Amino acid sequence: MKKEILQLLRQNSEQISGEKLSSALGVSRVTIWKHIKGLIAHGYDIAATAKGYQLVNDPDTPFAWEDPDRYERIHYFESVESTMDVARDLARKGCSHLTIVVADLQGEGRGRMRRVWHSDHGGLYFTIVLRLAMPPQHIGRVNFYASSILAEILREDYGVEANVKWPNDILVDGRKLCGMLSELEAEGGMVTFLNIGIGINVNNDPTPLEPKATSLKRLLHRSIMRKELLAAFLDRFEQNLEFAMSEAVIDRWKTYNATLGNFVTVVTHNETIEGRAVDVDSDGALLVEQPDGTIKKMIYGDCFHSPNVN
Ligand code: BTN
Image (cartoon, rainbow, N blue to C red; front, side, top):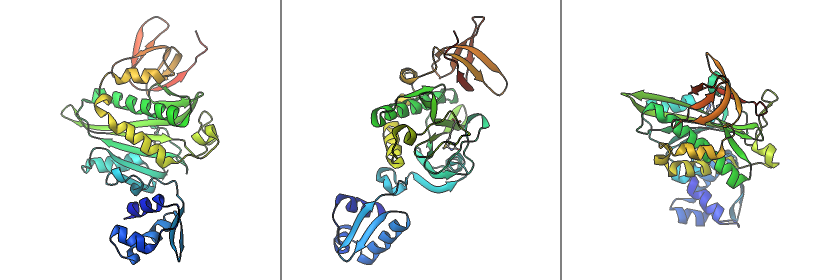
């Protein structure tokens, strides 16, 4: 009911009477008032006068009813420890393909390589549950698809020069705007679920603890509607998941990559490799040419660029 009321309020720049709303939606005026009160409690600025109701301001909260097409699939939380944990629980309980868990705050946001992902108010934090029939070794392609799409949206819709640093960090002017983390479970050589978690610095201020980070607000000098960014991402992401599983996705990623050609240091849990990033293979592994000319294939790790070293 909330999504229908909002739709009608948004269609009317003037006040709309309770009577009109109740006849359009086939419910009593008392029911309308109950839902309007609910929306106000959720932060919607709705003027209620004797003449009717008018939407004055929308909160930037990705409530499920804000995305009617995905209403059944979006699980919004004000605060969780990590959307990855909630998504994993839902996936284990059999939730549907393309379930989305999104939160305003994370108490224990997780980054790659067991790092903390600071998740203050204003950032966009979400995890998508995917059930794709694919062997685990190809999941890198889906992550590459997600980061390419996000880079495209940031460029086309927000005008920021977003690049992708291997494997899937989004950078603008060398500063990190977004990070991705994925987790999977597999059975019989096939993925049961793949969860992709994405953290985007939107309106939050990255702390001095993250000196090499930036946010969209910092770059654009204005606040961005997170719910619009989320919907834009999901629209494009869900459009072509067949492509996401194909080798061709790597070429798309290369269009936006900031890593290839650079001298890099790649740190994993048990080794540090230095050399020139020469290519990524069909599953997204980074190929690093070491000083002795041998090529080392890195399937995970933190990658640091040293563009000035020849
Ligand atoms: C990284 O760059 O280290 C990956 C960061 C991933 C952060 C996102 S925020 C949503 C999801 N929930 C988490 O706890 N982590 C991911």
